[in-house]
Amino acid sequence: MSQMWTRRGFLRTTAGATAGLMGLGLYAWQVEPHWVELVERPLPLAGLPRELLGATLVQISDLHVGHWVSEAYLKESLDRAAQLRPDFVVLTGDFITYRWADQLDGLARVLDHLPRGRLATVAALGNHDYGFRWSQPATADHIEQMLEDRGVTVLRNRSAMLGGLQFVGVDDLWAHRFRPAAALAAYDPERATLALCHNPDGADDPVWHEFRGWILAGHTHGGQCKPPFLPPPLLPVQNKRYTAGAFDLAPGRRMYINRGLGHLTQVRFNVRPEITRFLLSSQR
Image (tube, rainbow, N blue to C red):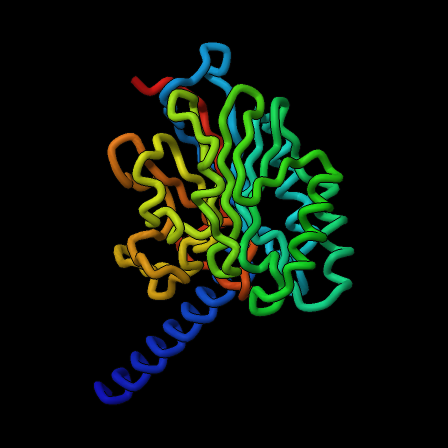
């Protein structure tokens, strides 16, 4: 009798474990990749104009428009971001996972839902915006024009004063278009400043030594899958501490890495997609 019950117990345990794994796989495939988290956090900036105290800035990253990300999901997520009525919107690259020309039509449809900041909407490009193997600059130029046509200021290795903030935007590291010295050439350290840099590895370049402000990045997707209490096993960066969230880089310089909305493979676990809403405050 004990052997029979042992066998039955083993079968029940095996069946339960199999069902659990199937349920976990279904969750990671069908639920979490589309379960967007609205992250709200302060963004203290030295030199912030008094009239911008309490202003809101929404960061959106890594849409990855293409055949692997639901167009309806992206439109719904962008509509949700628009409902926040932000003062500023920043977009930190990888608008598309480009393989075929018809994906640009899908990108146009998604960008028609892009939220606009009351004061400014600013973007930097990512590696996937440069097409297959980051080797198609004409694709990046086309995406830049699509964004500009929709009222987005695209910063490619340059800076601009917009809505009372100084924005510095660098082009992509992996596409070999990364020119931070050019982007910082007109940088005024007395002004409240935000830098847009798709790949967080770019923040380790020594050219940032004198920079004071926040660097906003994307690219990592937070690793997409993260075991509890452990770092994500796969990260597309050299500096493996750059996962997601806020990082102290140096006195007066910090970075925030957004987990992105899209994905390259439809699977996320313990790393929900993200829209970030910052509340601007003064840093003494």
